[in-house]
Image (cartoon, rainbow, N blue to C red; front, side):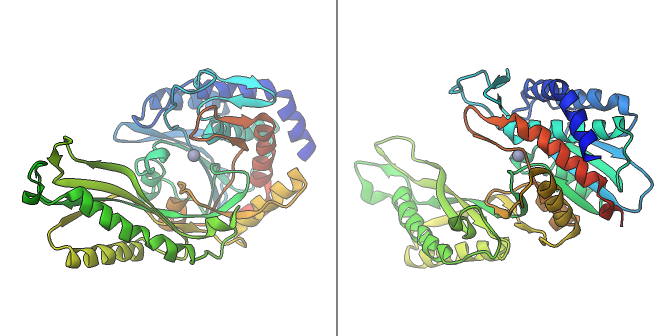
Length: 398
Ligand SMILES: [Zn+2]
């Protein structure tokens, strides 16, 4: 069976690549979140001839496409991918939305994250249907919006509104290790309030910038403590086992050089390992701020939450983890590694909200979110084989 699938993929290589390229050509940059309808229409068009059940669930005018291949099983495997991409800069060698193939690589915005994966999802289904191979359980696909901005109106919406109720899920995002866990994030904006005045009479004011510097130094000390904490999960590099804290991703304050700044704000990006949670991470930061306020009562402090995403974890021994592991091992000829991803994925909605096991796996490439993003084309075809193998695994239906 594996051979006929491999052969079919070889026959269809050009069509598959053309489809991946057509998705890259639709610039679904987020922000602002554009061309979503066009992208969804393109995927719908590719799947139309299959006669599968197609639904669109829109939130805030942003469509999420759900495709169902129901075989009457009691179990459902959900395969998810997001179709938005991060914006491209003007520093690309190629036009980011006019895909180019060179040396076995496909270049374009989204080539790696994750339009090639969308092509692998669509073509694994098309190939199985063409070969009249029946999945081991019901298959449900989703192509969702807004992952790059938190996924609340995308996968989050589908899960939390119970529009999908699978038994296990695969998110075809991340990298070529099996992500069975990812870190969470707590993003805050801290505003230090002093009192503005003319810079010629600085004694009349309270310099919020200086206060902000003192406070950020105190907060930064937390990094030493965090670096001693290590997750039990596997990671690509040992350093990735620890939670992290980044200060000043965005800083704002002051208006003129000759004015003493009355307000100064800076952001915090705190990455949370699966052994921690947002509540405790927030408390840890608030304690430092409270201590600062006691010793520096002249300042006011405002804390605004920008983003909260809990970390997520699925056991390496869960059924879907094992099935994916075995499929990769059989097709690639070596055992894949499980890994904790430092970035967060839509996986968390399945694991934390839908309470089902979920793992992630993706094509290989480079420069996701950077300039000259690309995917190794061979991994697109390889991943179609892996997905077909997962979908056919009898264990899924049990
Ligand atoms: Zn992604």
